[in-house]
Image (cartoon, rainbow, N blue to C red):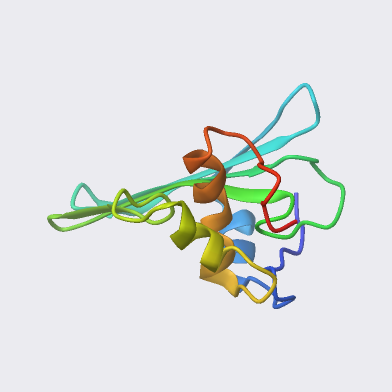
Length: 129
């Protein structure tokens, strides 16, 4: 399944497009039409990653990270460093609101998933869209 993904500022998200077209990706279409993309990869036990995206309206447009496509988990291990690339416990809700906005580029657009996680998996009234 090939879709063209954009960030909130309209730029093509080349990293996410590469991720979604990878032969390592697993795609699950849920009963409600939502799609879950899971990509697991890396070189060995010291360098690996797990990234999960959800497209809440499936194959329908707009396919924009932060509007209908959300990075829920980005777990990376590189040698002894392990980090989550979206939800960061040192950041608070205001940090995510400041990055999840109309001018957000590719990485900042992915923080919108962290905002929804922080809000208890709810899209609140002040969500930017």
